[in-house]
Amino acid sequence: MPTIPTTPSETGPDPVDGPGPSARPTDEVAAGAGSSVAAPSAAELARAAAELAGGLIAPPAAGRLGDVVPAPEHVTPDPAADFTLAGDEAIRVDPAGRDVAEQLAALLRPATGHPLPVADTTPRPDGLLTLTLSGAPLNAGAPLDAGGGDLGAGATSGDLGAGSRSGDLGAGATGGDLGAEGYRLDVTANGVRIVAATPTGLFYGVQTLRQLLPPAVESRTPVAARWTLPGGSIVDRPRYPYRGAMLDVARHFFPVSDVLRVIDHLARYKLNHLHLHLTDDQGWRIAVPGWPRLATVGGVGEVGGGPGGHYTADDYRRIVRHAAARHVTVVPEVDLPGHTNAALVAYPELAPDRVAPPPYTGTEVGFSYVDPASERTYDFVADVLAELAALTPGPWLHIGGDEAFKVKGAAYTGFVERVQAIVAATGKTVVGWHQIAPAAHADGRVLQWWGTTGDDPVTAEAVRRGARLVLSPGNHAYLDMKYAPDTPIGHDWAGLIDVRKAYDWDPASHVADVPAEAVLGVEAPLWTESVTSLPEIEFLLFPRLPAVAELGWSPRSTHDWAGFRARLAGHGPRWTAAGITFHRAPEVPWAAEPDTATATTPAIPAQPGPDTAAERV
Image: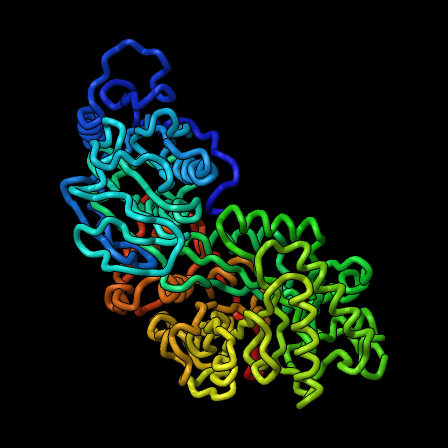
């Protein structure tokens, strides 16, 4: 089940939140419009609710405001300002951010049992849980229960408009220019407020709020707990605009529901791109009008001889919609001119010898390619990319370009240059693996670098000609690599990648002679030659995905292995509560699971046979 439901839960109030002192009428939604009864102040009711809850539930150890992954840019704790949910809060939100507020309510309702109605901030901007877009009135100087929200002494909303990272967000900061994805989160004894320039920023603020609550908030059923957030302020924004992960659905096919859950995992850690590797030798996974056999013939099969499958246009639209609701951009990849055996099985006219090869269920690479000298090949490429461009609202189309070992020299660069032009004609920007670097530059071109050493003069030259890089170093970010020699699934051609190795590298300086400003971001690929199920996907993603996410989001100044492993340790109980399979990496001091934890970690079966994958993407 996705961790952020698309519809609110119907779970009733938690039985520990009974009537009496904990009933806290915050506004007309919670208390009834037109009530003439003089209500106690929100602060008085909060204290009364805390006392009642304290008498019924043993309070957990207080959380710390900085225990967030990825690490926020700036944290100002206020231990005297903790806030406890009493059960009768409404979520107030500017109309443009209502979808985010509904997601917050849907996230909190199942575990807390609280109804959490959602209401507009207009005409009343006050509330105990408030999401505010920076264009709306903030009344920053007023106390929260008077309608303005206490943003700290002398604090203001600042300029949260679009822009680059700037300024020192130290003590007393106003928020600075947090851009389109930044946010400010304030927790006081009187309530919680998230301020951002855009719904995207509000969404990331919600993900931080989620982590500040006890791990049991991830439960899908009511939990008797004291729902307390640590007091203070967080001012936050991303280091890089591109923060992603890749899921290979070509080697093994995964149904839409699995892809949706992966999207939820990305959003949880503020990753904003899902790269879908849709085609390869083993299977073609997207239907294309005019080329029906790509799906019905090329989509049959997978590594090991399974049934395979493909996505219809409606399936793909569902994935895109789910991603967009979580502020994730889908980046579709059609790998060309190599990795095309499935397409050649379906349409032998694309093969150099016009003969259909047999279906392929192995894991070797580099043997297949479409004919770069045939105009029919370019008709095929144009139709496929036009369909993906029409289905994909994001700006990127990924054309692969790796391991086309049988298309060499001018034939290869000429092919790439023609395909780059086809991408441009769709209105999209081309992305390719760094093997496309020798081809002529195309406007906006992005190279996805997957090398294992930082010395790559060909890529550096492409950057000098205008290319930007998304970094996916094979020996740090490839999540199909094993954690250790005895990891039951995965490969080791790029080395073993434990959590520390996934974390300890710097995208800004990783590739020699590439300036920091040319790095667009990071991406963690997960290839699936040995991965056959959602639990296996999760086992390889967690706990390394949060490590890469922190590299993409957090400022370099926060980078600290000891601090990261301590923060990450608290996420084990969260994943257990959410039913997420994960590897209990021995280098992480995992927090003890609560006695109430009921989720179990599915077994990861050992995969027979040798590791046959070559050094490849």
